[in-house]
Length: 128
Image (cartoon, rainbow, N blue to C red):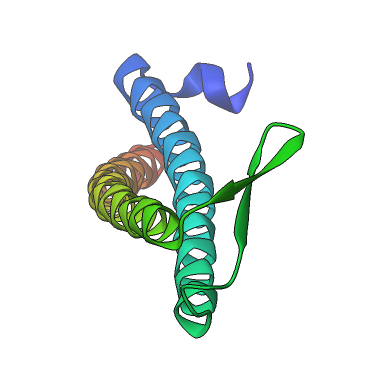
């Protein structure tokens, strides 16, 4: 019999839940990294826009095209993009914290049950 088959069903369920939360945490961390990159790009774009005068021509990508845009319109767009990325980053940080707390809670339950199982096995071995 394999070790997994020897575990009680509730413990196997906790281990599966632990693995699922770990995967969810990894997905959130990847999303958070992407959002933080978007936010940094928007900040950099705003810095560059602030260096330009109103008479400078500014272009933005629209698919495969470059389109001339007014500076104030693109500044507003970049500021909104930065703000949206900041909000998304906060939401993802909260999700990350919840997943980490859940992992810690499940880890404690698993550790406690494993310690209890070892203690019961040791007690049974001593009785023999």
